[in-house]
Image 1 (cartoon, rainbow, N blue to C red):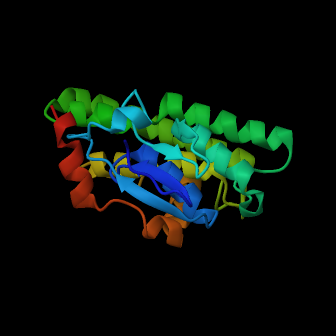
Image 2: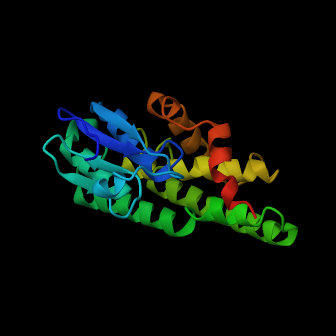
Length: 225
């Protein structure tokens, strides 16, 4: 039998995982008590198949016994269960905008750190990918501007699931860029993006839960080619 807490949410987490970090951020922002069960992704316990047969993190067990998986669905559940946290906007159209932004990000930016690590030792491929990264970050910058030209968050002063579901992958992208000695700090056209990123990284929920750079480097070295 797998371990769980009878009285509060049980979160099956891996600190190094950007998908799991989404759910941690949502729980902390919503001030939801939970017990964390850290899963070693390189040596998953036998009982974890009972929690999630796909063996992926995160997974969440409710005190009533239901098991839930898939990170963005978990973020949406937390937002709906605890509406006082205002992690999702009220209007159906604004909820649609959150989902569209997350979908755009997932299709265009989420894979970038993994792709960059895979060409670490290929100078030509790395240079080509760096140009693509800049272009996609500028598109992200434009989408942030379109939704709120003031910011700092996707919905201006209102921190939501749109921010939670995307920032964790920016952390990994920055790690991959640094590892490859690539700098984006002086690149033009990223001003709104930089303000967005800095505002989220300054939140207590982020500071207290993000994996350290050494932890990420150790976890992601397997992607380096």
